Length: 153
Image (cartoon, rainbow, N blue to C red; front, top):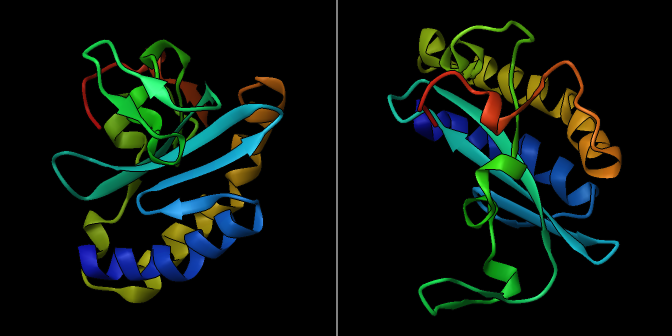
C-alpha cells in the first residue's frame, strides 16, 4: 500500500503544494513568505495505515541547533520546530484519539482509486493549512499539536 500512497501523493499532493509555492523535498514541503518559513510535513502513523499533515512556521535563515549543528534553511522541516507551535491537518473533525482522525488507508489496501481519493480529500482541506499560516486561525480539521491526546505520529 505504501507504494500506491506514494504514487498518489506524487501525482496529486505534490503538484497542489507546488502550485501554492512550496518547494518539495518529500515528505517535506517548504516556502518562504513574509520573512518566515512555512513548513509542512506528511507524517505517517508509526503503526502504519494512516497519515496526516503537520505544519509550523519558523524564522527564515539557517538554524543553529542547541547541539552545535547548523541546518541550512532549505533543509529545515517541521521536526526542527517547537511542538507547541505546530498544528496538524486531520481527516475528521471529531475529538477522539488522533490516530482515528488520520487519513486512513489501511482498510483500502492495494486500491489506487482509494489512495487517490484519500489524497484528494487532503488536498481539498489545504485551504485550512494556508489560513492557519496567514491568520493563525484553526479550521475544523486543524488541531494544535499540543492538543493531541496520544503519542502517535
